Length: 204
Image (cartoon, rainbow, N blue to C red; front, top):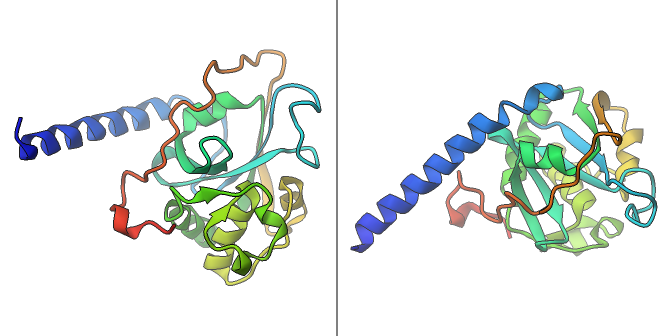
């Protein structure tokens, strides 16, 4: 197979996969009231041995364009994009926060895509953003997005701190520990490459 045909077939496979992901995601989204730019606060299944982060919620992510959730994950050590239905199935409790300014929310969703592939750093949210420009944890990632969109660095260190933000309102809650079944593979669907942007536009 020559190089041109190989590239064409590869693009077709990615396009088919991506279209299928969008269709399947639509079956899951009605379970929550979700808009582009919404922020997810989540809690793992299990006791404090599993939820080791300070506070009640132990992770934060953002709902990006085209039914993708974008988040910083220790495994696979990067900011990744994952289809919404994989994300929703991963956690028994998800609180949805929404910016009261829909224009800002939409901008944050698109800015988030620029950081896919960036490295993960566990304690980054405890440091000023300008001192650590190459990596993020889940909180500093959201903080960096807002710093770029509104020009101000929110004072968030742990996920629970977002609950105290007056311009983020709670709009939905998924909480079902009784019927929760943990996925056999929590890394399903995780992508280190944003499929809709050329590699040279990524921010590393």
